[in-house]
Image 1: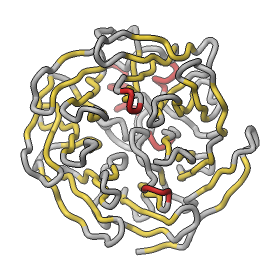
Image 2 (image 1 turned 180 degrees about the vertical axis):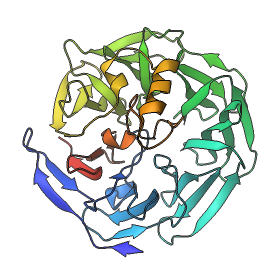
Image 3 (image 1 turned 45 degrees about the vertical axis):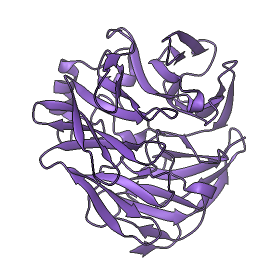
Image 4 (image 1 turned 90 degrees about the horizontal axis):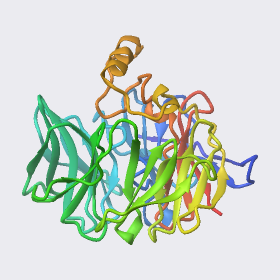
Length: 369
């Protein structure tokens, strides 16, 4: 199934940057999660999730103004799961209890693994392209599912709490970093399940979120919301402040460049738009406005949601129970498609982001300074 181009463009009123609006159909559409790039190598194509068929499916378009082509049909994918394989050809995704991939050129799909009865979160692929990891929840069990991208060597690494956002170390794919939800947050484990440890012991008084690798430095970078942006040495665990929000911007979702010298971020409370932060100095450069609704009551606070908060959210949510993977429409962390989630293109000339400024979340790409 294909659709006509929905592309339009405008100059950002705050910075003058050229912004491409990729989708306009009146349904939810958004790029990949901020831990993944939505662009293919060379920026020739851009893939995204859209609900235009009634359920979340994967689509792709020539950038910036090509026809839109459906890559999955009736799969009802995890909307923030798509991740491009290092071969640049296959896009991996989660659908129900399965991890699969689709060839972006031919549309051929293949199931990698089916964990019948389990819930799977977004997947991440190691830099060699040989392994994938996804968070799982299966009854009372939680943890990491690790397997080869060919489906071989699958095993589970159990963890006593909810797991989200697993990521392979960019320089040493034997290591996986992941978040234990809610606190303490940052953990690591070797791919074979050994050497599991907490990287930073903290309580509910520190709202640590959105940790990721600082490009190819191998260090970690994370937000202590809404106070500061910090860097952790992977080896020594030394923590340094990159930017203090009293003197810089309040970085929210963060996406470092490959060299680890700049960090792309969105902002909230107040939403000042997207920024680039210089890691060496903490100085920030405005990119463009997001004009997103940035929903979620918890972002007004400096602590994680506790059990009572989730109970209140379930009781008040209009669209059903709260999702353990933070994608459902709730009032605690907010519908994720209302958050910009900016991410670099592979050549770092563009950034994708989502905005529901028109009433529905749409896909945007801005040219970077």
